[in-house]
Length: 446
Image (tube, rainbow, N blue to C red; front, side):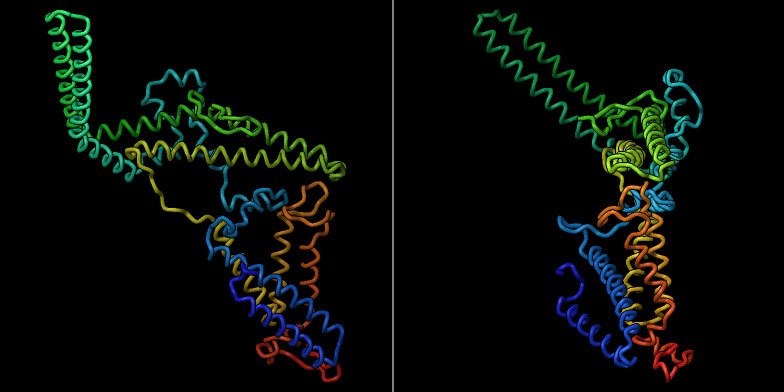
């Protein structure tokens, strides 16, 4: 209970007060068993919703730790096979859309033909969604800043390189002269050794001067240089998209990295989708009647397809980030995080659970709260239906066939919405008093 955002003593006090209020409300209604059962059902469901929401609030307040993970429904929807499963997954991310935008070649062309194109022509065929990321003004400004940093650091780097080369040449000369003395070489041979050292030192100084000169020229042509680097980044991504270059990736069942191009990975994803669809179709005529092994296998096929598609979209974004890092002089580019609809939906879900639970507990707008909670459970069921041809949802108890706990709780809430339980026990007796009638014979508000 330590995970609750309220003291444990308050929880026990609330539970005791709830039981006492239940007994008082039942006594007020002439010890009606119907009133007792319906109120107990409403309070139990309200307690469940309220503390489920409070736990999720606490998970976000605590933040990520070794023992805590902030609540997110993404893993739940990631494997959801139901009618709204795919739609809910897209609220967090749409890997299929990302793949279409970032990995679809703008012009149909074979790998062999594309490989023969010049760098500028390859860059022109970078997918527009990716090219726009590199052509953005802030990207060009970062490239120019990186070039300016290189120019500024060039003299110092040239000096270090020169000193290192001269030191190595002097050390080589010392070793060579020591060996010459040991072997009794002539003065002419020793002079030749010293002459070689002088050449090495002269070359080191010339290389340093060239490095400084190149940096100066780079600074004078910063716009053109920035454009060329951006062009090279777009060409590098396009070569992966058209299948010329390959990048290492992880594949299920294979140890180590596997080099694959974007077309090869897209083909693999499509193959997994075909296998998953075929497996579903084989079970469709029998409505899922089969062994647990069959169900598990189909679930794994579906999950493999979803994971492979998500991994491909993630790796495409990682490649873009890698190229941006190179353009930024080796420094990571931090972009403003974008809150997805799924994350917004999670926040709404958290406070929806708290609000509905509190309304059911305190009997405020009870019928509306019952209908809202029932609608929420319907959406949950449609994401993970208890159909025999679908895999069981995560953390499922038993083996429900069509009817699971969500269905039972939903029906109970719909039944509660037909009775004025908020007037028997709750704030509805005050808020809705002007709209209620009282039956003196039955002793129950209607």
